[in-house]
Length: 108
Image (cartoon, rainbow, N blue to C red; front, side):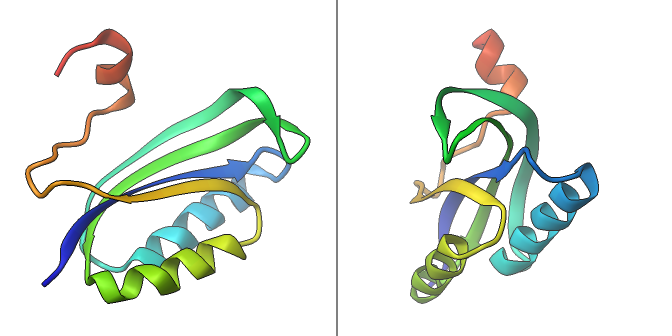
């Protein structure tokens, strides 16, 4: 049975916009075809440097996947070029993701 997951990825700011788009597409392809939500937050500054960088390109996905595939995806993300950091979590089935605008304004 497939479960619902959320992935937030931060891509290096030291590559071109075309390379960022290619990385986003590559990660999305890795997740499979059952993506229910995708939002590009764009370039954002870090509170603390990550791998000697002060900003990165944020993307958030919500998707359904068989739990047995999560380990392989996590391994692939760890070695994915130009990916500074990621967070991959299982979320409740009834979880509805918010857009960045909703988060910033506090509206739902």
